[in-house]
Length: 157
Image (cartoon, rainbow, N blue to C red; front, side, top):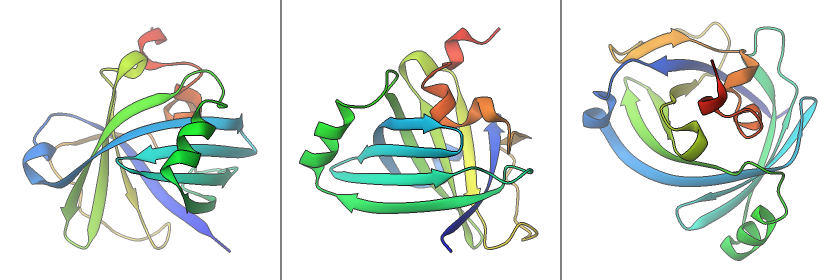
């Protein structure tokens, strides 16, 4: 089974940028944003990807994920077919011990939102939380990218 186990956090400050070893530009849209199955198209720098994600478990940490690299040309064409609300963000990769945090700085209608994710090998795996890591939001639906495409951060009260 292809499982993704991840935890998600808000970010308190910009000090992660000093620790980052790579920065990526991401445009992504959703061909299907149903909570039971999400089909995402993503352009990361000069590469294209299509991803299918299943429904999360009760804690929001674990779900089915299948991803395949596709041509950049195909990804750009598929982005045009996506539901309204294509997401643009910059992703910073930050190594903390034997894990890599993906820190997403959202743009456009989600500007002001900064979220860090860490992928784990098990739900109980221990990991170091750097000083810039804030409140945990794992499993909070409003922070899912598929939800941010429909209800962007700028609309939150």
